[in-house]
Image (cartoon, rainbow over all chains, first blue to last red; front, side, top):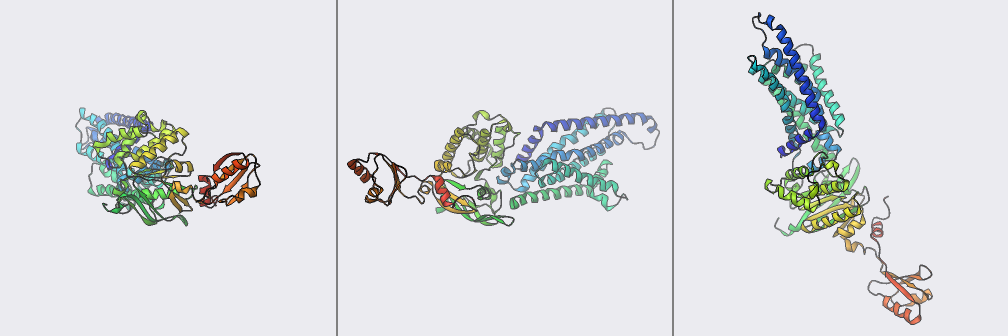
Length: 247
Length: 313
């Protein structure tokens, strides 16, 4: 049942021309960023060779690329999540899901899984681009995988929050703006926090992505992302249930 | 479920629903039997749509219980909902999907086994006249076709209870005729509840009528008998050479005679004695030149207004 809804969600996303446009533009920007970093790395490579523990290509090119992708996803995930529930409500198609023999949890999970399947190629795209470096140099596979996993978890947490915001309203545009505001608010909390170990920093998904970005696989960060996703998905389920209660 | 109530497909008891302080549906009870088409009739805002939404599980009632084929909608929602097909007032269509994809999604959502999908799709499209529309995008279809797709999604999993909220709204007369024929066919196999404010619809497709007014069911009977409600038997007779009114009044069996125009009279009589034949014989005998005799028939509109006590206050 979850898979049926996920599949439908994936189809709906790809049915919109804007999706293709945004994915294409995202890939273009990331490729541009990748080449600029490559260029900079090649220029300083001669000096780096004299250093004792110089950063390798993975650290100098791949990690910043994933960092850029994380920032781009913060802007783009709300665009993909905005329609998921808000548009169903606006077009009155929510009635089809609510009167079908599926629970609200299955509806929300189905949509979330569909979104993850959709975001997977974005992360895979970054990974593939960086893997092309492997033709000329030795890559740090551990760092790469940590980055990819981190980016996926970060995208999932953005998606869960976006899905919840989308369940609050009947206007997709409002959902997009509100989700973007919430995500940039969390980001500002992180950048604005004074000390690097401030409790405020721990609130923001981006700060937990940073350790993945540095190649650090901390189970605490993993738990943070899982809890973040679960919390917002639960809130979305509750909101849909309330739809039944309050109309 | 093999007990005596097996042919009751839907039963609702004491449903109530408030929106804020306003009670929209008040202690409503309803039964639906297999093979029956029930018309839910009422003014706009009488609570019809709210009732149907509660019966399908889209809206939770504040009190009361709903059983679908023996399954409690609140306690066993999945079993109960798998037996319902619902067409809301605005058909829940994904405009960007093709008709086939949409109907298959609806069927999967209602847990139709994979092996039966293709057969159910072909059969449903045939019944709804959508054979040629399978690959078309729903958003590009005309209103009539969209309504048919809406009905198709409600029946593709062969539900035992089909609930249609104003199924013919916004259609042209020939489409209305097709859809009414389809509803009649559906009613023979399963059971159908439809809401409407069109009285003609009740007359042509419904076996039974429930009239809703201010959130209560105020009248329920077979649609044939509803037409007889409060009906005074009588006829209108045209006499080209009319006699005095007292002469008509004097005929045995005539309760009341009244002159409508120079040549037309309305004659009321008790239900068990029709003085029509006597009157015509007398007319021939005395040369009143009787031209025609038309039984009085109350229109469904009159009956409806009578039952709901005038317009919507």
